[in-house]
Length: 152
Image 1 (tube, rainbow, N blue to C red):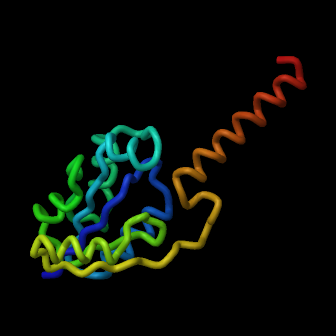
Image 2 (tube, rainbow, N blue to C red):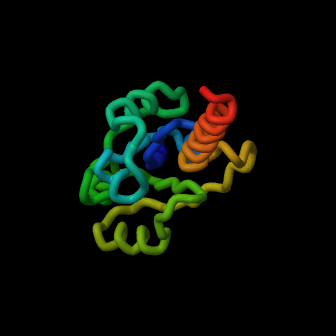
């Protein structure tokens, strides 16, 4: 059985996430998805909109996900050591460096391959959490400007 590990924030779940997880699942028999902790999201991206327990619960409900866990806060490789995947699937836009990951895996005697998945190109304006947040902000600002014009 080939175990694939996919990781992410999964804040404001969108079709880019679904595509990533479906493609990751195709790489093996079992898909284990690691959801980033709130502290990790704050450090690397932004203040999470959805708390980690809620994001974990949502990911667990997806039919392509066989198992979902919260990641370790300080050492992402500790999660890899715990899960022992055969393949680590990276999304096309994840900031991880494949060569650095491969070196660290080798140093820790972890025998896992790293696979970078292709880009999901449909609905480009809504396939990323930051893009969705930006669109919400723009819609809110537009609504406020219209209310100001209308004297509300």
